[in-house]
Length: 318
Image (cartoon, rainbow, N blue to C red; front, side):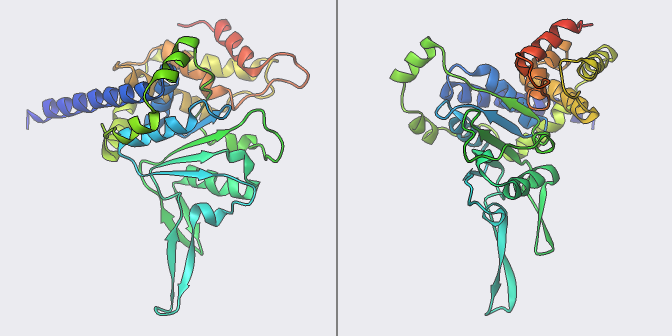
């Protein structure tokens, strides 16, 4: 029995090593985006979902496909359009005459990693079907409840500039996403490398999983065992208080957002190889956690990102 803790530590060390191998593979496929890759893995390990708001062609699909590949996860891409129905996502019960009963045909939501592409092109009813499944981990069809896979990770994308024919997600739905990131255009050096590098689709085809869905569940538990000091909790509370009292934001962050911030900070600390959380971890994840949850007052000629940066400068790190 005395050897059990040592064996568990060795197993956890092996998982963490394979996690870093998986991140290295994704970074070789999605060049020049190590910060976003760290945040994506942190979001996954904090048991959240990821929103990517960016232009077409910057690597959103590549990121989702690469993550699914290195995780050995069942992957589905759902292209959201105005005529997409909830049943197209969730599935449908079909009556079988030969058996005189309904048979459930699961939709693409029954996967471990979902890319919900251009989610703001679907109607609010269809959006709600996805987002309720994200929140509850299950769907109810014809009165019968069906449990989704675990782990279950959704990466949703929306185009920030294309407002024609779109249905913007309301604040209550945006809150379903743990983090929101932007990939952006590559630096000139990285773009040059992209122009001459091997086709990324071919690289993905030859890529082998470094982890399994079971490993992801274990890693999620490993992350949340990290200790949070009183000073760290003080810093989180100071940030939350500043968002609520500042005249530069319409509304402040909720207690649920504060809990999410702590979980993300733990996950990021684990992802970068530490067994403890620092205020710098919280500061790093804060913009991605707050960006889609906060707005600036109408008429203010400054972006929410700029105001978040100002807030982080104003709140002292303990």
